[in-house]
Each structure stands twice: as structure tokens, then as C-alpha cells.
Length: 265
Image (cartoon, rainbow, N blue to C red):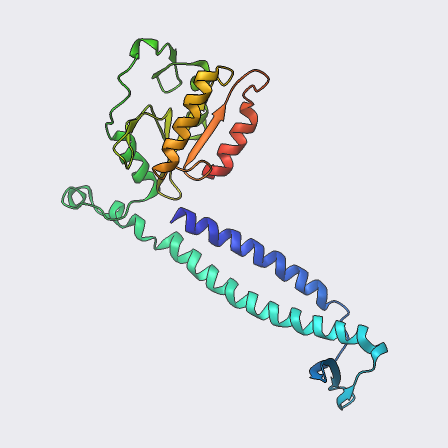
């Protein structure tokens, strides 16, 4: 629902910008209308002006600029009417989503009633709360290597993972660290981070590859990406990959901006 609201607002802004351009086209537009026909493969233009009661006068070649202005005026006028109609529909729908959002029905029930209901739809807030409370299987390997404590109070293995965990915490992006992921072919992996894309109600996985200078590590990295791809976890769709190596340091400012845009925060 949040994604739908975002799309509606983006569509509204695009339409308003288009309407402003159309209104600009109407400024100083000449009076009259144009009828267009084709004869022997050539376009012909005929002028109609209410004010001087001239009906379907053939427009000569030198009047082509006037024909263009009249056709552009007609286009802009039609466009504005269609835009205004859609803007009214969008405004009505946004108002409905804001005040009568079905995601909020469960939260509107009393606590006593909520205990008796298994909700079908949840508000973003409750959706996140429930996801964060769920237990999950973490990577059991090398637990003694988790040396760095995040702002959320958990331990991670590297300074880079510490920066990412703190970034997600600061941006209020729900995440799990090294949560078990069973792929379609039954293979088990533990992505560095499992992120909750609240707007689209889906998971996005983040793998950080920090030793790209090491040939064996680099080869393993590519094998892992191939494994993900074969199992429907696609780089740039539901998989984020970041890399470190000689001459390729992390730019957390750019990564922060990327995460803001990807997760709408």
C-alpha cells in the first residue's frame, strides 16, 4: 500500500508538471481550429475560425506555422482535460487510502478482539513490529569472530558490516544479520543482511564482499552470485552487492543515499 501511495503521488507530480507545460503552450495561442486531411499522400490543412466565420479554408504552405500553433493548441487543450480528470481520480483515491486504508482495520479493533483474529492485512508499523519480533536461525559458524558491537547491541564480524548495520539502524530499515536463507534448490546460505522492504513487502538481501584482491575469495564471490541468480535472487532486483579491494574503498555517503532511494527513507 505504501508503494501504491508513492506511485500515486509520483504520478500526480508528473501530471502537474505536464499540465504546466501544456498551459505554457496555450499562452498567446491564435484563435481557430485546424482540420487535417490527406490527399494523394500529402497532408492538407484547413482553417476554421469562429470569429470571422470562415469554414474549412485551405491553408497555404506559408501558413504552416499557423497550422502548427493551432494543432499544438488543440493538443494542449485535450491534454489538460484528460490530466484534470485523472488528477481528480488520484485525489479521491489518495484520500481513500489515507483515511480508509484497509491495512488499518486490524489495529482499529480492540485488544480483546485482536487476540481472536489472525490478520490478513497489516499496517506498515505493525508489519515491521511483527517481523522484528520473529526469531530466526543465524549463521552458527565462527561465532567467536563476531567482535564489533552495533548500535542495536548485536555483534558482527567486520568493521564494514558494523558500518552497514549502523547505517540500517539509523535509516530505520529493518534488518537481520546473517539470517538463514534456504534457496529454491535447497542450498542454505546466510546473507550478510536480510533487509525488509516495507513499501513492497519483500526481502532484499545484501552481501558485502570485502576481500576482492584475493583471487580465491573473488572466485568464491562470483560462484555465490551465480548460485543466487540460479535461485531467483537477482543482483539489482532483490540482491545488493557491495565490494572492497585495493583502490576500491567504501563510500558510505553514497551508499547511504543509495539506500535512501531504494527503500524510500
